[in-house]
Image (cartoon, rainbow over all chains, first blue to last red; front, top):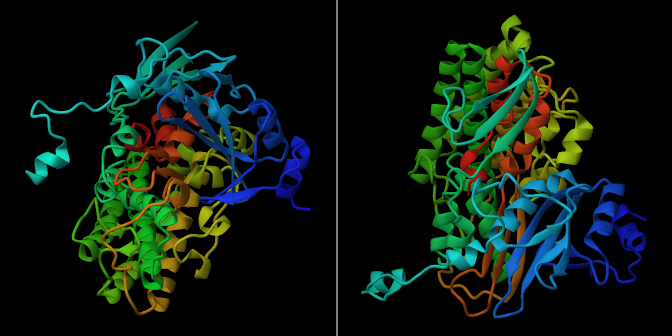
Length: 151
Length: 360
């Protein structure tokens, strides 16, 4: 068995990997992100990044965690209940900057860590949703950029 | 008694907006704190306001050195969402462009490293060599920085004069073997400035998740061109240089050897360049709802794009970019710990940092 095939067993998941959009996904289900990070450390996978998604309307936030194992890209998705999730920074040093960035951009609280000094906005207020604050506004003419070009 | 020396965000030894607070005891650096975000541009957010043509031009501006890599990674992800496959000739042209970009990036870095070491003549030699690569890139694309080569389903321009590229490759290879590599590896100045300086151990490189030449100079043999091939890399024969020492010399050597490997890849790609179309010819695209992720081995290491789309939309719902310097830069803290203060500019430069990518 390859290391990739062993991972679901190590995590106690019965479902196999599914492939979609260039990534091998494993249903994270009731697993905590920390147990996944511990397993990734055990198999010597390389942490790549966390991608945050602000879902439409009131559906909240989704985080996708990515690791690489010998060129295989693995992904785990977490739908946040509220705006917090455990930090993996103490288990995975490589997650430091991206956790801080997501905290600053999406107001996500990674429980168990500190954020100061802020990564991108040193001296500014902690955890704000920059996407909401910086949402594009229509120009005075009331037209979008594309509409102005057409005009 | 320890004292703090701030280096940056505007500093003669660090000519880009980034700051390092060095905690020193005498001339020895005991610890360091990094600060980024001085020019953070919010490009990921801006991408959501651009359509599928505009977003390519926007993401090309994430980096001023490896602009082509960003459009390549983005286009590969968008091709996954539109179901388009580029023709074989386009894949070869993408490979050639990616390696030309690696050449000019690595030679540029060699020049800057030489300047920081005190080798001004070598700096001029490297920039003269780089200029020849830039001339070839300009001849192919019409541009020197943002080449606008990639599009969804292929490339925008063909390679019309392979002989000119081959000629440049031969000159570059000869000069690297005759001058640059011997001086970097044998001169006493280079040895004393680089050997054993700014060490990043294999274990620390692994835990920090560093990528690209910095990882390979710390003994981690990862290279996406080999591990997860894209474009035409599966059909190329090349070596992945790995050095175990983790110091500045190892980073110098890895990049110098990668220049030679890039020349090898370009030569093979030009020899095998298949005939046919350079793109699928589509100019209107239908995206499916979903997310596609693409990774490419840029000159500085792995670039990853996650692109999400909603069917019927002209704009992406989300574009996330993980650039190599973003992964490597935190490791500078461990490289400078224990180093002499005077070595810190060279140590920082040895990761070939891209602040533009970091403040995307």
